[in-house]
Image (cartoon, rainbow, N blue to C red; front, side):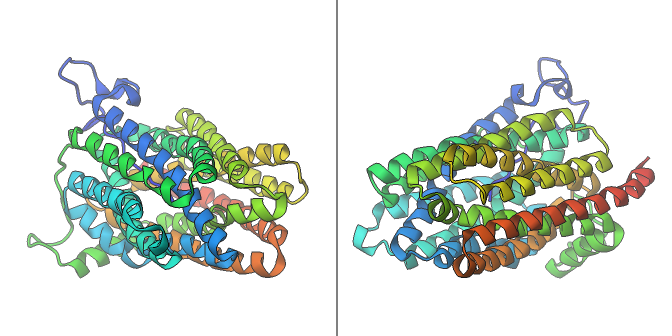
Length: 434
């Protein structure tokens, strides 16, 4: 789930720094504000990578049940489903800096300080489930708030690049986090490994505190009086479904993508342990291979940021096919090295979707409505994710991991077909925009 951050490079494409150099002409990583955000997110994402494997491994080691292990994934997707639209309203209304820093501090406490303070005998699976749920609520606020901040600081042609650079922090977290987690679990245990997250989230909050967030003028199609929560929800829903139906199709594509990929990430330790007989260290390395693929695609997206929506959706189609084929290949090998190569290819395919989808939303939605559109998008995607985790958790437990892997691969193939339809629908949008 990651965590999706925003880029704080400039207030507009013609904005200038105090030194007179156009911010829009500089690489995003060299701008002051974006640099703080990028480094803060890199550190917190490594902490996430460490804790994610520790959470899943703890539950599976205690229960021995793939279905109970998948509950971790379910708890992480419930808040965006139930609270997503409401969170979107508040993301549009409240200062994003306050939302982001508060979310980071809460996450440091929930999956950091509290696990360190709970006695070993009291740290049960039920307690862990509760902490994961509360942590997911804070994360459900952080993601849309950071993504909604991008258009205020990055020129439109760099939206996809900004999303890709910040997805790169997630990729690096996946590369280094699980490997460190596997070593930590083997040496100390799952509970101790979770303590690392407290420091990483607090560092992220400190970096965000140094960022100069630009304030944008909020306009609304409503009357001069402040709209109610219901009015804001209706306005956002109408825009995302009626005014811009292409966004509804994009949400449908994201739902299929999430249906498959969320199940893969939630159940991956089960697949690796049952199919390949690997321990936590080896599972961490395989997960790192997935992160390398994500990182390579994130870097590659820097060169397609100004492509048309149609071209970017075609890239999603090709990437989904690549992931689907590589997943099928996992069922035919027992060699962990071959599995590592296939996981890298899966990561390459998975890395294209989110930066491109967020970039399209940032281009289409007005700045005062991005939070609500992202809330609806997230609700659709996470609803599908919870369904995918449940379905493939049951399939894996009843039919075996090979069947589960093949099913996820098939879902990604269908995602490619829907992305093809989306690329055709985007032609009308491009025509209207021009």
